[in-house]
Image (cartoon, rainbow, N blue to C red; front, side, top):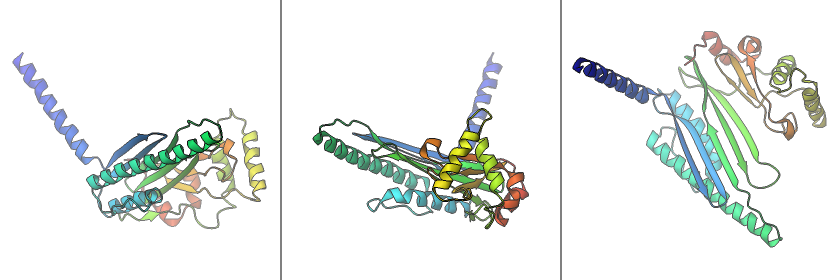
Length: 280
């Protein structure tokens, strides 16, 4: 009996040691703050590099801070791209509080103006910011960024962004597609976008809605997506709301398989997916 107890105790010690090692060596750690104030809520969530080698770490932190900067305003000092986890934690906490306070104040002012007009308004304003690690291989890591907020009106606003970093030197690859491929890549874009539609096989109505919108905007071709970053198996693409279709049709998001996308990629992007796409 004593041998069994000692055996299981040893297993627990080993498991604890392995768990602690894994926890310490986690390259990216999610940091999230949620704040609720009268009239508004905020949620800010970031996958922050805690155990990533330079210069990649500074480049990723720089991207995160760049994305948050438009919401920071002048009253909240931003840390540098060399900041540690504790400093970033403090910054993100203050940002979430600032946003909830700001949106709450705006909501109460709006509700008061509606009250003066004889109407009751009790809809909560919100702001959500999410910056996750979207994909990673031995050669690159991709990050995405999603903003969503509501400050009254018919619907909220939404915006997305994304970028790929080369791991060996931290180089930020903003341009995934080569220049002057707009016309040649049309069949591939349509194929990916239509495949993302929820319709059961019949995408004709979905396509017509996009074509009508492009015609209204005097666009002869589908524009290249505003968001494009690498994943191990595909190029992930996203369009913004109102970029190629009305709000009711959403913001098309799709995947273009690497082997199909390869002829249209920039030299730097192509090298990353040709070198190898072993997942991390």
